[in-house]
Length: 568
Image 1 (cartoon, rainbow, N blue to C red):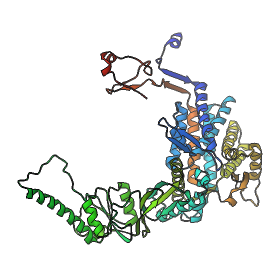
Image 2 (image 1 turned 90 degrees about the horizontal axis):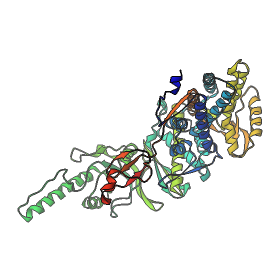
Image 3 (image 1 turned 30 degrees about the vertical axis):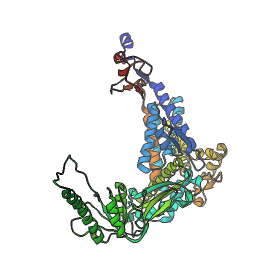
Image 4 (image 1 turned 135 degrees about the horizontal axis):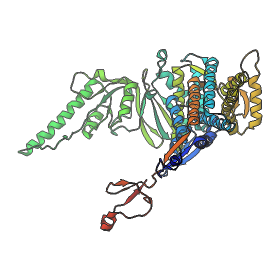
């Protein structure tokens, strides 16, 4: 036994913590991450600024976005960040709530460990409480028609009111825009909507000029000033080929014996281009959009026929135009009639947007793709604006897929906490205390919203519990935090709705990550190789003192051969 104690199993580069020490460090790291993002939660939550090593500024109120930016070393903190990303990828919203709830569960687990509870008892108790919570969620949720526009509007408003866009004073306008886009593109009988068919364009300007275009906006200008600036009843041809002289892919040469041969060769290429343009004219197309180049000659020929052209349009834009107009992309102008490839829009025009000009393809009949044009005063605000709109889009996508809702503002968590406390009172043994702690963790959601709104937490807790426990005519009181007016209020009257899909994901992920951290009792970490570096000749290695000025064998070969260091 003495020999085993003296034997070294791991090298000097490995750090190890185990038992209660490892568990406490993990829980502490998780609590610290939760403390960082708590101030995001709710309509009165704060924003944070992150400046990366290149000086790029990110202003955000989105938990997942901020956590993706920061660099953490501790594995438990990374687990929590991955949990937030999982919620973001799965349901698109609730990224801050899941961290706040997980942090609250972890904090109470730490308290239970101090009382001598075994980690498995805590994990099992949390698991049982999760099952109870999901059952209650199922019973409390309200089913609606997935095409109910009013419910969608309430969902979008609830989502956007907790984002930075609410401070711009246009959250209601944006909510209506997002709902219109979803309603237009949804396949309600099959409970699905393709969110990728919503294009989001950004331009610096007045936020009130944000709008929905029933079609596609392209961040380009019309090719030639001789072309019309606008066309009514547009017939659109999408091509994936050059309307210009094309070089060969391999080295080639053309041998000529006289100046006439040069002229004949040039004339042949010109005739070939004219034939392609004539095909376009005969098809009846008056808007030509190409992924590739369009020469000046081709532009002049098209302009003579009052045809608009756009060259080198992005591939994604081409697909959005296809979906919006019904056009089909072609890469062959010589095969048969092009009429079957044409798409239609009532109005195509070039218009100024801020200091730039953009081409609008709009008023499409039954478009399968639409564009939301976002305007704001700065690039940083636009980026956050974009993230907020995406969150609202995903919330509505979840509703179309599963049209179940509960009331928000922390009211759902407060009701579940109250119900679990009642069940805990009827339970014996240590499980009773674990259920009590779980209920307290759930209340952290409404209390954090209240704290961020500047409300007194103790008074709010007492009032919230009193109102939740009081039922009128057997009806549940959906009381939560009205952060705008800073009071406890009935969320039914305020129409604060949230998706059941998001709530489920938050509960499952928070309990899962907490149970994982509780069960870990051994952490082994390699020392971080902060001294990793690469030389100009491509040599990459790590060694002691690599982050300081040092010599290598090639440093002795002369100054001219000394490579530069690039540190990570």
